[in-house]
Length: 200
Image 1: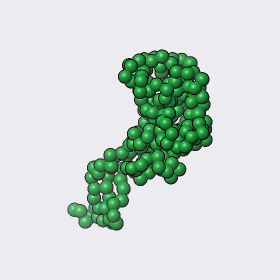
Image 2 (image 1 turned 90 degrees about the vertical axis):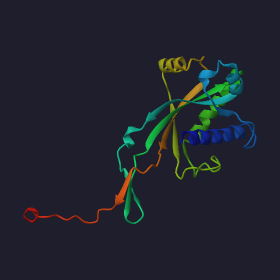
Image 3 (image 1 turned 30 degrees about the vertical axis):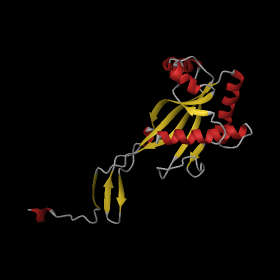
Image 4 (image 1 turned 45 degrees about the horizontal axis):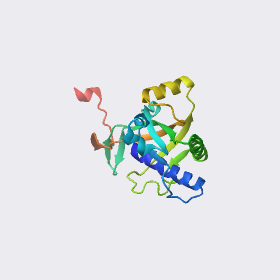
């Protein structure tokens, strides 16, 4: 599901940037995914240079959604037990990795404007973003985060890279589910209560 979420964001963002530049959707790709921690490696740097780079920097489980039913109705009379889906928040860093600093700031402004205009992404409001849709339901809401100077320093420190013009977003909620049936059975339709005298 994380791949689908990132793919959808890339497609939508690239279409927006192309339109903002006066071109049609399908123009040269500006946004790609990659690991900015590897910008010092020449073979990686050449692929990510002059692009907006999406990097997944952290995952967080949404614990408020852990409770709920672990069973579902299958047919008119059967019940299937499954583990609850894992709901994740994705922390995505958008890095404007351009040689020209003015271009980097312009691209970063376009990222901000894109998510200001569209915060929630679903299959219904993002037609064609996922050519082969392997899922029936999808929802991702992007929230702008404002880390402190100290947090930004820590972030780029553990990435092991020099700081580049960037912005951090949290994507909520990506559901991960294996849909594996753990057990099953029929519905309980009646309960017989025996009196104490009847059991002796």
